[in-house]
Length: 186
Image (tube, rainbow, N blue to C red):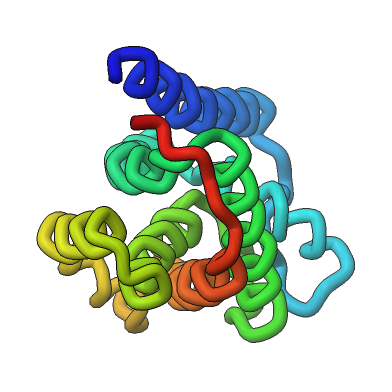
């Protein structure tokens, strides 16, 4: 049990360290333009992969770190390989949605991934119908359910498109991974 908790902590911490290092690197270099998603442009295509790792400010990075920690912890329950596959799927599918349909502006930050994990964990309860998946979904709705309003346009500086397409990517990934069995850590 303790080893499983340590392994999950290492998985989640590795993702957070990667995001922090990439964001700090971007803060120091102050790249213009940021390697974010710029919809419907060739130069915006790499942002599909890089946008979740780049943040516009230290506050942006902190806020995303809090949400990312709890939700990624639950996704990491099934092990590193399962977590990596889920994360990559959400990043690519959600990023493609933003690239195809987003406002013509740079979209950066991990919030699309956070919304993806939210969608994944809730949809997983319907797809899997196991006690653990339903318990996680209930916990996610209780703790993070208020986030759902983030898929609606509110602040022009916030990419509601990343939130919406991240959420949809998480739901789609849950269906896509219905037959993928992770190795539970506990």
